[in-house]
Amino acid sequence: MDSRQEINFKLIGKFLGMLLAILSLLMFTSIAWSVFYSEHEAISALLIGGGITLCSGLILYLSCIKHDHRNIGKKEGYITVTLTWISISAFGALPFYISGAIPTYTDAFFETMSGFTTTGATILNDIEAVSKDLLFWRSMTQWLGGMGIIVLTLAILPILGIGGMQLFVAEAPGTTPSKLHPRITETAKRLWGIYVIFTMTQTLLLMTGGLDLFDSMCHAFTTMATGGFSTQNESIAAFSPYVQYIIILFMLIGGINFSLHYYLLKGQFSKVLNNDELKFYLKLIFGVTLLFSISIIIFYSSGIEKAIRDSLFQTISIITGTGYVTVDYMKWENFMWFGIFMLMFTGGCIGSTSGGLKMIRILILFKNTRLELKRLVHPMAVVPLKINKKTIPPEILQNFLAYFIIYMLFVIFGALIMTGFGLDFKSAIGSTAATIGTIGPGIGSVGPAETYAHVHVGGKWMLSFFMLIGRLELFTVLLLLSPSFWKK
Image (cartoon, rainbow, N blue to C red; front, side):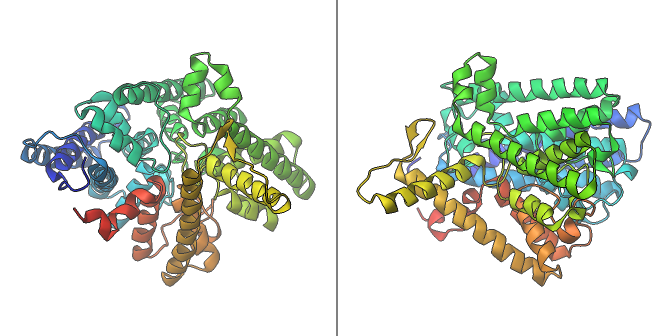
């Protein structure tokens, strides 16, 4: 789209209306669990919430159905993606609020935003008291948010043509996703196909570990999305070592670029084995797990298997931003929980369901630092920065450096804001890092054994905003706050 053209708000409205209609239908599917478990308390809430969402979507769609059919451009793409995540969270919160399971709309919105952004931060102090249908809807919000509601729509309703690429890119700005097919709709279908296959596989494996269909589906949904919502108050600590190992495996898979999963399934092993980001991701997990395992054995006289399992689980859970817990890491030695805090600034691979800075950015920062040291010793040497044997252009490096600086500034200033809402500094910076990194549990009073229920109302809205910008990788939302964006 020509940047001088006016923004096509009717096209944006039509797309949002369509998304809300789809959301309502997905909301209705949770009613099946009401019937199965004979829990009828939330049926009316799901029907009313879904009905409001459906009517709102249809009204918006029909009022915007007549537009000039221009392909969606960059500006419309960024606006649509941001409004999508706000809208689905606003309407997705209705069943929780109407049912009374979450008494205030602020808390319901926080929980739902946490779901769709796959953050996993919760205000529920007694998860097991919530009805099964609402817990299923809670898990589904993460599953939909994992691969992205926009990508889902492009996969099943390719009405936007090639212009849909702007929506695809707007969900992960700063890098262009690997296109597995020349048509964006085919790329979306293949990504979702892989996502569904992994989810179904994990569901079956969890059922072989003794979980029923409900718990298996809910945890498969939230594992593949690297979201972290559990149906149990104790999170994954409530389950057997077998179940924990299955979840470890699929958290690891969820944190890998889904393009690499596609190449692996196609037998293109060299693209997987020679991927620098994947190797860095696996090496970091191995190194941290080894350090934590040795520390647990020394300080807590733990058995070797349990020490390795707890260390591996928490390392992968935090790096991928899943946020599941099997132990309260705040009870570990100070250097260990501080190590967990530092891992909150990593994230999985680009093109995965993980949040955070992403491994590729961390890797490029490390490589660039090493090259700068070489240049100091050899000022005349020309040493290009390479990833996967390809030279990284200066503009990409500048983009990554700018993103890193802005990310860290948001964490610092966010922590200062949260102290204004009554949190001590450790809890403030922990909550900010955990929400921007879409991790969930932080440190301090929002650690793995606690919830966000005690946070001030204003703080919950601020943290909801942090979840949004973290899920959309800062630039998408920040562009909308720039006056120059709205100029013709």
